[in-house]
Length: 287
Image 1 (cartoon, rainbow, N blue to C red):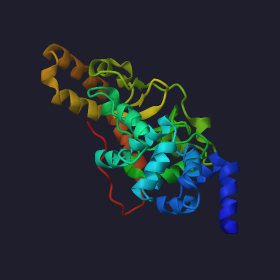
Image 2: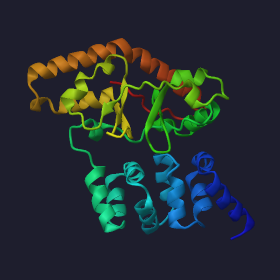
Image 3: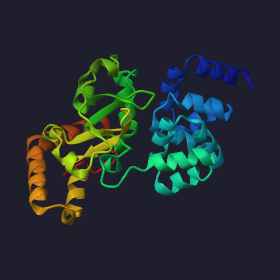
Image 4: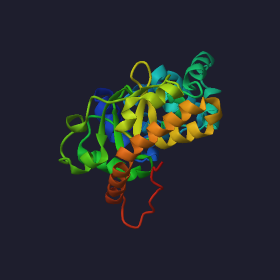
Protein backbone atom coordinates (compact mmCIF):
# COMPACT_ATOMS: atom_id res chain seq x y z
CA UNK A 1 0.00 0.00 0.00
CA UNK A 2 1.48 3.34 -1.03
CA UNK A 3 1.39 6.59 0.93
CA UNK A 4 -1.63 7.98 -0.93
CA UNK A 5 -3.67 4.88 -0.15
CA UNK A 6 -2.60 5.00 3.49
CA UNK A 7 -3.72 8.61 3.76
CA UNK A 8 -7.05 7.81 2.13
CA UNK A 9 -7.66 4.90 4.48
CA UNK A 10 -6.78 7.01 7.50
CA UNK A 11 -9.11 9.80 6.42
CA UNK A 12 -11.95 7.34 5.75
CA UNK A 13 -11.43 5.68 9.12
CA UNK A 14 -11.14 8.92 11.11
CA UNK A 15 -13.72 11.00 9.20
CA UNK A 16 -16.17 8.56 7.57
CA UNK A 17 -19.06 11.01 7.15
CA UNK A 18 -16.92 13.65 5.44
CA UNK A 19 -15.30 10.97 3.29
CA UNK A 20 -18.72 9.60 2.33
CA UNK A 21 -19.87 13.01 1.10
CA UNK A 22 -16.72 13.29 -1.03
CA UNK A 23 -17.02 9.78 -2.46
CA UNK A 24 -20.73 10.23 -3.28
CA UNK A 25 -19.85 13.05 -5.67
CA UNK A 26 -17.30 10.98 -7.59
CA UNK A 27 -18.11 8.81 -10.60
CA UNK A 28 -18.87 5.31 -9.34
CA UNK A 29 -15.80 3.85 -11.05
CA UNK A 30 -13.49 6.33 -9.33
CA UNK A 31 -15.14 5.69 -5.98
CA UNK A 32 -14.72 1.95 -6.43
CA UNK A 33 -11.05 2.39 -7.26
CA UNK A 34 -10.49 4.39 -4.07
CA UNK A 35 -12.03 1.64 -1.93
CA UNK A 36 -10.72 -1.44 -3.72
CA UNK A 37 -7.60 -1.77 -1.53
CA UNK A 38 -9.72 -1.93 1.62
CA UNK A 39 -11.05 -5.19 3.04
CA UNK A 40 -14.76 -6.09 2.67
CA UNK A 41 -15.56 -5.27 6.30
CA UNK A 42 -13.84 -1.89 6.12
CA UNK A 43 -15.70 -1.09 2.89
CA UNK A 44 -19.00 -2.11 4.47
CA UNK A 45 -18.31 -0.02 7.56
CA UNK A 46 -17.64 2.99 5.36
CA UNK A 47 -20.62 2.47 3.06
CA UNK A 48 -22.90 2.66 6.08
CA UNK A 49 -22.29 6.42 5.86
CA UNK A 50 -23.17 6.67 2.16
CA UNK A 51 -26.62 7.07 0.66
CA UNK A 52 -28.20 3.96 -0.94
CA UNK A 53 -28.04 5.19 -4.55
CA UNK A 54 -24.31 5.92 -4.65
CA UNK A 55 -23.60 2.77 -2.62
CA UNK A 56 -25.43 0.61 -5.16
CA UNK A 57 -23.48 2.20 -8.02
CA UNK A 58 -20.17 1.68 -6.21
CA UNK A 59 -20.92 -1.99 -5.56
CA UNK A 60 -21.61 -2.50 -9.26
CA UNK A 61 -17.91 -1.79 -9.87
CA UNK A 62 -16.96 -5.04 -8.11
CA UNK A 63 -17.50 -8.68 -9.09
CA UNK A 64 -20.90 -9.93 -7.88
CA UNK A 65 -19.29 -12.20 -5.28
CA UNK A 66 -17.40 -9.26 -3.78
CA UNK A 67 -20.50 -7.05 -3.78
CA UNK A 68 -22.50 -9.82 -2.12
CA UNK A 69 -19.82 -10.22 0.54
CA UNK A 70 -19.93 -6.50 1.30
CA UNK A 71 -23.75 -6.49 1.39
CA UNK A 72 -23.63 -9.36 3.87
CA UNK A 73 -21.62 -7.15 6.21
CA UNK A 74 -23.94 -4.13 6.00
CA UNK A 75 -26.63 -3.53 8.59
CA UNK A 76 -30.00 -5.00 7.59
CA UNK A 77 -31.37 -1.49 7.11
CA UNK A 78 -28.58 -0.48 4.74
CA UNK A 79 -28.59 -3.79 2.88
CA UNK A 80 -32.32 -3.52 2.18
CA UNK A 81 -32.00 0.08 1.00
CA UNK A 82 -29.13 -0.79 -1.35
CA UNK A 83 -30.77 -3.91 -2.77
CA UNK A 84 -33.93 -1.96 -3.56
CA UNK A 85 -31.85 0.15 -5.95
CA UNK A 86 -31.38 -2.87 -8.23
CA UNK A 87 -33.77 -4.60 -10.60
CA UNK A 88 -35.19 -8.02 -9.74
CA UNK A 89 -32.61 -10.19 -11.53
CA UNK A 90 -29.68 -8.27 -10.00
CA UNK A 91 -31.24 -8.52 -6.54
CA UNK A 92 -31.70 -12.26 -6.95
CA UNK A 93 -28.13 -12.78 -8.21
CA UNK A 94 -26.67 -10.91 -5.25
CA UNK A 95 -28.92 -12.60 -2.69
CA UNK A 96 -27.89 -16.01 -4.04
CA UNK A 97 -24.29 -15.20 -3.06
CA UNK A 98 -24.71 -13.60 0.36
CA UNK A 99 -24.51 -15.57 3.58
CA UNK A 100 -27.53 -17.95 3.50
CA UNK A 101 -28.95 -16.84 6.84
CA UNK A 102 -28.61 -13.17 5.93
CA UNK A 103 -30.01 -13.81 2.46
CA UNK A 104 -33.10 -15.50 3.86
CA UNK A 105 -33.76 -12.55 6.16
CA UNK A 106 -33.26 -10.00 3.36
CA UNK A 107 -35.56 -11.91 1.00
CA UNK A 108 -38.33 -11.81 3.60
CA UNK A 109 -37.94 -8.11 4.29
CA UNK A 110 -36.90 -6.50 1.00
CA UNK A 111 -40.11 -7.18 -0.91
CA UNK A 112 -43.06 -5.30 0.50
CA UNK A 113 -46.58 -6.73 0.11
CA UNK A 114 -48.40 -5.96 -3.13
CA UNK A 115 -50.88 -3.09 -3.15
CA UNK A 116 -49.09 -1.28 -0.30
CA UNK A 117 -47.44 2.11 -0.38
CA UNK A 118 -44.05 0.45 -0.05
CA UNK A 119 -44.56 -1.67 -3.16
CA UNK A 120 -45.78 1.33 -5.20
CA UNK A 121 -43.05 3.75 -4.12
CA UNK A 122 -40.16 4.58 -6.45
CA UNK A 123 -36.85 3.92 -4.60
CA UNK A 124 -34.78 5.61 -7.32
CA UNK A 125 -35.73 9.22 -6.66
CA UNK A 126 -32.83 11.50 -5.88
CA UNK A 127 -32.15 11.83 -2.17
CA UNK A 128 -29.68 14.20 -0.57
CA UNK A 129 -27.85 14.28 2.78
CA UNK A 130 -28.56 17.16 5.18
CA UNK A 131 -24.95 18.26 5.63
CA UNK A 132 -24.02 19.29 2.08
CA UNK A 133 -24.32 22.84 0.76
CA UNK A 134 -26.90 24.15 -1.66
CA UNK A 135 -24.18 24.44 -4.33
CA UNK A 136 -23.21 20.79 -3.86
CA UNK A 137 -26.86 19.76 -3.97
CA UNK A 138 -27.44 21.58 -7.26
CA UNK A 139 -24.40 19.83 -8.71
CA UNK A 140 -25.87 16.46 -7.75
CA UNK A 141 -29.24 17.41 -9.22
CA UNK A 142 -27.61 18.35 -12.53
CA UNK A 143 -25.77 15.01 -12.64
CA UNK A 144 -28.82 12.86 -11.86
CA UNK A 145 -31.58 14.88 -13.49
CA UNK A 146 -33.49 11.73 -14.47
CA UNK A 147 -34.08 10.88 -10.80
CA UNK A 148 -34.85 14.40 -9.59
CA UNK A 149 -38.45 15.41 -8.93
CA UNK A 150 -40.05 18.58 -7.63
CA UNK A 151 -39.49 17.46 -4.04
CA UNK A 152 -35.98 16.64 -2.84
CA UNK A 153 -36.04 14.27 0.12
CA UNK A 154 -33.30 14.62 2.70
CA UNK A 155 -32.11 11.44 4.39
CA UNK A 156 -29.25 10.85 6.81
CA UNK A 157 -26.59 8.15 6.63
CA UNK A 158 -28.96 5.77 8.42
CA UNK A 159 -31.40 6.26 5.50
CA UNK A 160 -33.91 7.93 7.82
CA UNK A 161 -36.10 10.66 6.36
CA UNK A 162 -35.15 14.00 7.90
CA UNK A 163 -36.73 16.64 5.69
CA UNK A 164 -37.86 17.84 2.29
CA UNK A 165 -36.89 20.77 0.06
CA UNK A 166 -38.83 22.08 -2.91
CA UNK A 167 -36.75 22.37 -6.04
CA UNK A 168 -37.60 26.06 -6.43
CA UNK A 169 -36.44 26.69 -2.85
CA UNK A 170 -33.14 24.99 -3.57
CA UNK A 171 -32.63 27.06 -6.70
CA UNK A 172 -33.26 30.28 -4.77
CA UNK A 173 -31.20 29.49 -1.67
CA UNK A 174 -27.80 30.87 -0.73
CA UNK A 175 -25.19 28.50 -2.26
CA UNK A 176 -23.15 28.23 0.96
CA UNK A 177 -26.10 27.24 3.19
CA UNK A 178 -26.46 23.61 4.23
CA UNK A 179 -29.57 21.67 3.31
CA UNK A 180 -30.36 21.14 6.99
CA UNK A 181 -30.76 24.91 7.32
CA UNK A 182 -33.37 25.23 4.56
CA UNK A 183 -35.21 21.90 4.63
CA UNK A 184 -38.70 21.51 6.01
CA UNK A 185 -38.55 18.98 8.84
CA UNK A 186 -42.29 18.40 9.25
CA UNK A 187 -42.67 15.99 6.34
CA UNK A 188 -46.01 14.43 5.45
CA UNK A 189 -45.26 10.77 4.79
CA UNK A 190 -47.12 7.53 4.10
CA UNK A 191 -46.35 4.32 6.04
CA UNK A 192 -44.94 1.59 3.81
CA UNK A 193 -47.64 -0.81 5.04
CA UNK A 194 -50.55 1.47 4.06
CA UNK A 195 -53.02 -0.17 1.67
CA UNK A 196 -54.58 1.46 -1.38
CA UNK A 197 -57.61 2.77 0.48
CA UNK A 198 -55.48 4.35 3.21
CA UNK A 199 -53.15 5.87 0.61
CA UNK A 200 -55.97 7.54 -1.28
CA UNK A 201 -57.49 8.87 1.95
CA UNK A 202 -54.23 10.59 2.96
CA UNK A 203 -55.07 14.32 3.24
CA UNK A 204 -51.64 15.45 2.02
CA UNK A 205 -52.60 14.71 -1.61
CA UNK A 206 -54.44 18.03 -1.53
CA UNK A 207 -51.05 19.76 -1.19
CA UNK A 208 -48.44 17.49 -2.75
CA UNK A 209 -48.02 15.65 -6.03
CA UNK A 210 -45.58 13.18 -4.50
CA UNK A 211 -45.34 11.80 -0.98
CA UNK A 212 -42.43 10.01 0.73
CA UNK A 213 -42.98 6.46 1.95
CA UNK A 214 -41.30 5.40 5.17
CA UNK A 215 -40.87 2.18 7.10
CA UNK A 216 -41.89 1.78 10.74
CA UNK A 217 -38.48 3.03 11.90
CA UNK A 218 -38.72 6.15 9.66
CA UNK A 219 -36.43 4.62 7.02
CA UNK A 220 -37.01 6.18 3.60
CA UNK A 221 -38.41 3.62 1.14
CA UNK A 222 -39.10 5.86 -1.84
CA UNK A 223 -41.53 8.40 -3.25
CA UNK A 224 -45.09 7.66 -4.32
CA UNK A 225 -46.25 9.87 -7.17
CA UNK A 226 -49.82 10.93 -7.84
CA UNK A 227 -49.47 9.51 -11.36
CA UNK A 228 -48.40 6.09 -10.08
CA UNK A 229 -51.28 5.93 -7.65
CA UNK A 230 -53.81 6.97 -10.27
CA UNK A 231 -52.58 4.35 -12.75
CA UNK A 232 -52.68 1.71 -10.04
CA UNK A 233 -56.27 2.55 -9.11
CA UNK A 234 -57.38 2.49 -12.71
CA UNK A 235 -55.71 -0.87 -13.33
CA UNK A 236 -57.33 -2.33 -10.22
CA UNK A 237 -60.74 -0.71 -10.55
CA UNK A 238 -62.54 -4.06 -10.61
CA UNK A 239 -61.18 -4.92 -7.17
CA UNK A 240 -62.85 -1.97 -5.45
CA UNK A 241 -66.43 -0.90 -5.11
CA UNK A 242 -67.30 1.43 -8.00
CA UNK A 243 -68.75 4.04 -5.65
CA UNK A 244 -65.53 4.18 -3.64
CA UNK A 245 -63.31 4.24 -6.69
CA UNK A 246 -65.15 7.09 -8.36
CA UNK A 247 -65.06 9.06 -5.14
CA UNK A 248 -61.37 8.35 -4.64
CA UNK A 249 -60.48 9.39 -8.17
CA UNK A 250 -62.58 12.52 -7.79
CA UNK A 251 -60.64 13.45 -4.67
CA UNK A 252 -57.34 12.86 -6.47
CA UNK A 253 -58.38 14.92 -9.46
CA UNK A 254 -59.50 17.74 -7.17
CA UNK A 255 -56.16 17.62 -5.37
CA UNK A 256 -54.30 17.65 -8.65
CA UNK A 257 -56.33 20.54 -10.05
CA UNK A 258 -55.34 22.58 -7.02
CA UNK A 259 -51.64 21.80 -7.05
CA UNK A 260 -50.61 19.87 -10.15
CA UNK A 261 -50.43 22.56 -12.79
CA UNK A 262 -48.37 24.88 -10.61
CA UNK A 263 -46.11 22.05 -9.47
CA UNK A 264 -45.38 20.79 -12.95
CA UNK A 265 -44.74 24.29 -14.31
CA UNK A 266 -42.27 24.97 -11.50
CA UNK A 267 -40.63 21.59 -12.04
CA UNK A 268 -40.23 22.30 -15.73
CA UNK A 269 -38.59 25.63 -14.96
CA UNK A 270 -36.29 23.97 -12.42
CA UNK A 271 -35.21 21.23 -14.81
CA UNK A 272 -34.62 23.74 -17.60
CA UNK A 273 -32.38 25.74 -15.27
CA UNK A 274 -30.47 22.69 -14.02
CA UNK A 275 -30.05 20.85 -17.34
CA UNK A 276 -27.13 21.91 -19.56
CA UNK A 277 -28.20 23.42 -22.89
CA UNK A 278 -28.46 20.87 -25.66
CA UNK A 279 -29.17 17.99 -23.26
CA UNK A 280 -32.38 16.08 -23.97
CA UNK A 281 -35.12 16.60 -21.43
CA UNK A 282 -36.69 13.55 -19.84
CA UNK A 283 -40.45 13.22 -19.86
CA UNK A 284 -41.85 15.14 -16.93
CA UNK A 285 -44.13 13.71 -14.29
CA UNK A 286 -47.66 14.40 -15.40
CA UNK A 287 -50.90 12.74 -14.36
